[in-house]
Image 1 (tube, rainbow, N blue to C red):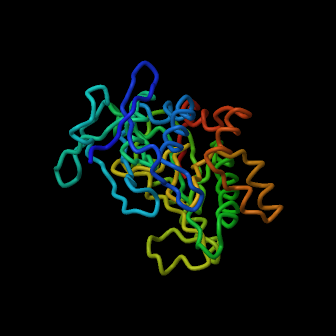
Image 2: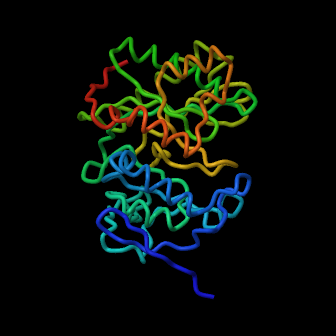
Image 3: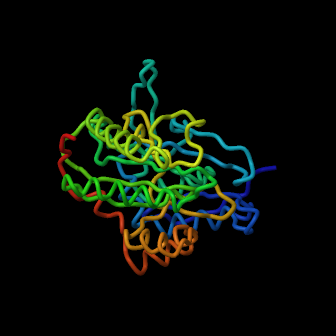
Length: 302
């Protein structure tokens, strides 16, 4: 049986989308059409964070309860207006990554069932130069996002001591991600080394609350500071990306005051946002993550 397609306007283009009634989030009855509508409505603030960056698609063709797969090589059937960038892996193989440079490319990718979009910290043309440094804070599930919030505030304080401003977003899953905008000449060796050193310092000073080593058996009751995302061959979930959770939660920019209030209230729900809530936040606050794209900061030596 042929898949039913219908046109959707995407900026200056019209693309063909399909299976809009397919349930993607069974627990709440949210459909593929709802997913595409969210990405269309969020595109004006999301695309600038995706533009010119290698993209990994995390595809859920049958929704969050179905099987998923990561797709790094841009599909051969991609329209010619979906731009790509070739990247040579460490084993010598070349991967042609898709890039989302406009709303049409975003909706084309979403129509493939790409609930989650993961992007590089560097841009095409300057693949060895990250525009930001990231700390991915992954709490023990029994501790939850508030444990990550406590460590995020501690990292923010340490960064401020060396005159670095930082911004935070939810992962959309169980943790938080802290970004340090740079947008200056820096290498992944520099950002990775800095992030690793700070993570290990916190681990030494807060051994009961922080771990920086990869072994999962070491993470019980602690927050894992994943500094290794600062690597030219890794991607991180993009700001405003949906996540494959029971509800359509989103990787959402936060104000630091929101993090502090959630901790004071001991209320993890204050750090969890669905797609509709995110759209309302954008209407009210604009793009809280815009400084991550624009702010210029130099990475000091620890």
